[in-house]
Image (cartoon, rainbow, N blue to C red; front, side):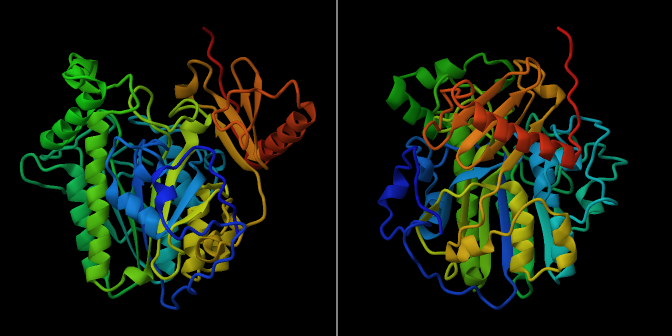
Amino acid sequence: MCRHKLVLSITLCFFYIGYSYCLGKDHQANKPNKKPVNIILIMADDLGWGELGCYGNSFNETPNLDKMAQNGLLFSHAYAAAPVCSPTRASLMTGQYPARVGITDFLAPKSERFLDPQQYVTMNEALNEEGYQTGIIGKWHLETNFINGLGGPQNHGFDEIIATETKYIADGDYFAPYDKIASLAGEEGEFLADRLALEAEKFIERNKEAPFFLYLSHYSVHTTLAAPETTVNKYKRKFDEKYGVGMADKLFENQRGNRHRSKHKDNPYLAAMLEHVDQGLGRILEKLEACGIAENTLVIFFSDNGGAGNVANNGGLRANKTWLYEGGIREPLLMTWPGNIQPGTVCDVPVSSIDFYPTFLSLANGKKKYKANLDGIDLSDLITDGKKPSKRPLFWHYPSETGNWENRMASAVQYEGFKLLEFYEDGRLELYHLEEDEAETENLVKSMPQKVEALQGLLEKWKTEVKAEIPVIQEK
């Protein structure tokens, strides 16, 4: 089992009575149900590590997510396999590192890359083989040739596909009528996050008698930020109370593209978007209770990468989306499963988005033929019994064109509390002891050459194994 050792204060979580920390205290959760386990994976887009109340945020209001942490399991060291969205989503669907899949950057419009259905048995397909009804609601972003593309969710075996993008949606399409989303009609002004939650409720109702896997993939809180005016105004008032009367409107007036950037970690527009995601989660949990299947359903909440710069709160971690520093890859991760996960548990075992696939397959008693192709590990014993997995390194590889500014292209390895970064443009190495320096402020390369050598050896061996592509350095 794992020992709770949060360096950053997770304020609200300290108030939860009856916490049982993963390492150092024995706890006995009830044995998992013998019935097939329903699985709901809810993913936010660009949600920073410091945005939720249970991760220490006092401006945003996330009561349902905080209650989820109180009633379940909170990870303090959960990682996306990439600092941008498409590679992380590829890692979820395949259980493999993005470098092995060959999707290492977000897929731009008309990108030639896509998740090839001929090469991969995706998570939902594996669960479908075990008798699961599978559905995706929301963002896919593993194919951008929307008319003739081969890598869309329809090519990867989902039984139900709802509200998935039909045009490039990076700049937002958050209110009805939705002209970038498939087969989704709503009344004028309907907010997309609310509609996705409603569709999730309907999916649960339709499939409550059989095991199901639902991938609810929100478009929020990706920029351009937008939310219903009444909710935004609520947080503007909170912002003014904190920073001075009229400061919210002054901060956001005349911003190019209405991206609503903030020089503060608090952002009324993002907070408003997040509140609607949180409300939707609350309705989904209520629906599970009403259908009598809450104790047989594992619910997971995650984000695809760190929060975007000048918009988000990454909880004091260094940098943001598009960087391999902690602010770009460490994510909020919550799980709840009544009767099977010990309430109020906090765990600091490093886990990754590559781990969901083998974990879900294990909970579904999946066939071993898929497991040989997975980079992730099965976390089911950690989730239900706090059993600590063997220590293993985690890797990242970001050789991509969008990282070719400010020298962001890099690879990284984290192992036994240390993290080594290798930057491609200037060849520099950076070493941090995360257990002592979570904000990555002190580069230990010169003082710990043996550690650098050992980690660099692991990284180079891994890059060879996954056939990581060599980045192209553009001349300036």
